[in-house]
Amino acid sequence: MIGKVRINRFLAAAGFGSRRRCEELIRSGVVTINGERLSKLAAIVDPGTDIIAVDGREVPRAARARVLVLKKPVGVMSTVIDTHARRTVIDIARESGYTERFFPVGRLDLNTSGILILTNDGSLAYRLTDPRFKIEKTYRVAVEGEVSGKTVAALAAGADLGAFRAKPCGVRIIARRRGGTTLEVRLTEGKKRQIRRMFALFGHPVIELERVALGDLFFDDLGTGQIRELTKTEERRLRELAGME
Image (tube, rainbow, N blue to C red; front, side):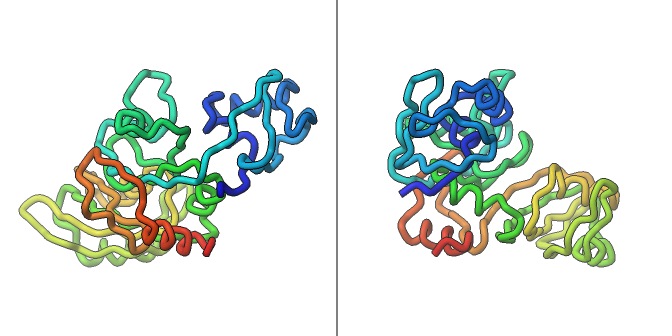
């Protein structure tokens, strides 16, 4: 069963625009829950049981909770809709036959590839993105230049990125090559362009960046651009990582 979720997230996932746009709908007084006009932006709803309507038209109740995993290619947006008509992860899901209303859990920027979860389960999405639950994400990073052991230690200790100080993280060198280095980075946070900013601080621009795992789930069977539903074992483990089992 799909868990409870904030109303703006539910409406956004149902196709009513961005969460900010959905908040505007709520403020305008056109959203009702079980026949009562909504007055709180932070209202929590249960999509499986509550009757939610916009302008008097009922929003279809969500189907069973489903969780998909996609290996996002470079050049694809991690959004439901893109204002510049670029291809999104939802486009890939629909092209693959998943026609329910899914939304991506967190984001990978346009030039980052790798593992991304899509779901219609608001509670799971919340847990996976809330930093309090500290779910580790593993990335493979290729950078310019030969990264020294001193730089690795400084990155692992938590670099000062100006707007914020990165938390300590796991960093190890996988391979050095002439003019470049490949590393593994493990984070429990995910600020905007964090890994790129971390390496740029030490003079090593990122050439390629790929998320390869969530916790201990690697999904090695997926090729770039492929998507599938999690197995029962994988979903159970993902929920355990999110503190839901």
